Image (cartoon, rainbow, N blue to C red; front, side, top):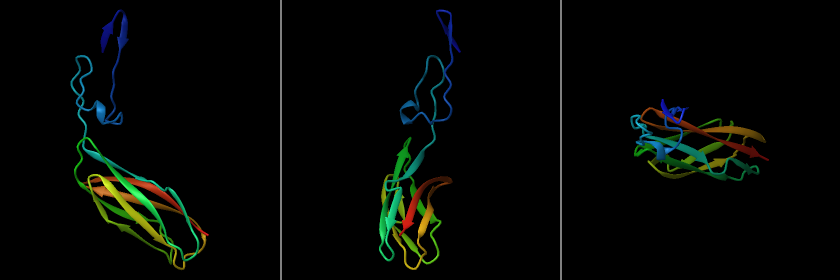
Length: 134
């Protein structure tokens, strides 16, 4: 805590959730913050619809933080019975995109919440894709 003109100013950084620009920054006389390398994943098409028999795709983006340079392996949970899904490529090095292709096959019409999981060296992050089969 530092005092300025009678006011107490408290700086508290909880982890690195304030973004990579604050890593290594000194605030007043406090030690520089340190941040772990990490990544995030996002589905650029978070809601997709396909008619019976027609494939649909969603782009999955991997973004690095704090110098992350690992390979992120992608997996999918929630695919309905009778349907199939594939990633191209199945893993992304540090930063990039993969295409998730969903083929309804004989799956029943309905709305399905799919979870895309990205894993690298003990780090796991998820994104959701809502797939409607009409």
